[in-house]
Length: 346
Image: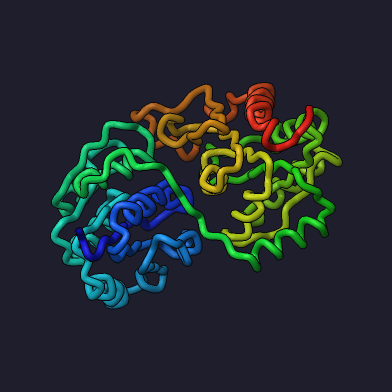
């Protein structure tokens, strides 16, 4: 049994969420081991107070501002003395941390379109070749060398009472009564954005057919402007969410009856907290990033092939090919499947 195991997944929020099953599977298999994680500051709140984690190393921008500060951070990781590292990112920057940690066993993924890139296969010394396309399964493949195969997929996203109380108060102030739907308008890439007027039509559909008001989530000024557009176009069918921290957003999503959004952190968070989810998948392959589970649905008409990878952040064609009717139909399927347990009525 390894005494100390270190997961390395620096960013982003969505990818961190998709790798949480690694952490949970390790804890289930090695209840007495110390488990650590190296993460960038943007996703760190997801891991703070996680019941399966013993040590969190947060790599900030300040830590990377000078070679000396970065070396100080690396020494902090090395002083923890991990015996095993799991490089779930597959880039030079993640594999370098694994190598510098001094771990004897440094598991990494074989070279492929998305992982095992740059110098990672040189710096890691136990290379795993996953057979499944999905990010979750590919991350879990790193555990095979530790005797863990096909573990139960768990996330165990932390929650706390003060945050839940605050969100409940905000819902009252907004005039929201449970149940409601949640729509996330933003994404990290322009190619993952779906038009505001289409989201507004979906919100109207949910209000008319399911008596669900939609809460419009956002992050940053651009997304706030789009959220306001959706709420304005949807009239009384939608309301703009307040500004949230990552963990406040998680609580809002937990309280929602349905989540709709594109391939980005909040969508993966919705799946992780077991909120029925409709994922609108644009340029990336749905079989890699789509929501998985019996009460989730994926909507995708086209993705970009590997030879057009350079255009994945800018090419909006795949996302725009998704119609309002397709999204409304997916929402109806998900809500019908949860109808008995949620108490909704058409």
